[in-house]
Amino acid sequence: MNGANRSRPPSALRKAFHGEAIDFASFSQQYRQELDARRDEGLRLAGLARQQPLTLLYAAKDTRQNHALVLANWLENLPVTA
Image (cartoon, rainbow, N blue to C red; front, side, top):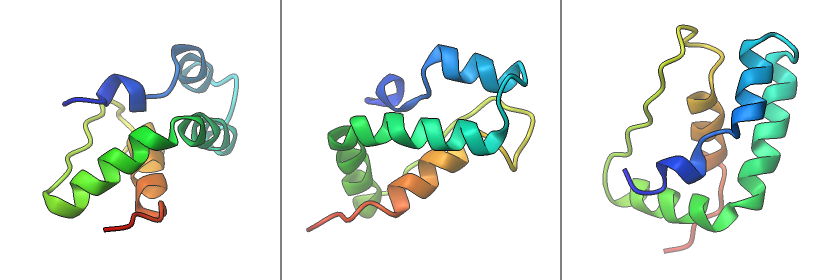
């Protein structure tokens, strides 16, 4: 998928979360800040999602606390104009 690398969390942030140096709330907040800095990419993905299904892939074992859920929530809350 185009943009996948630009939408994933930075390695250091991901490692801090998986290494339990930070909790999910901190991870989510920092990841959203990273996404805000790449808002144009988010708008592009959100626009695509309005036209066709958008599948977010992740390899985390935890289905309730992972970056795909943070990304999906962030994308859903972006104000996308037609």
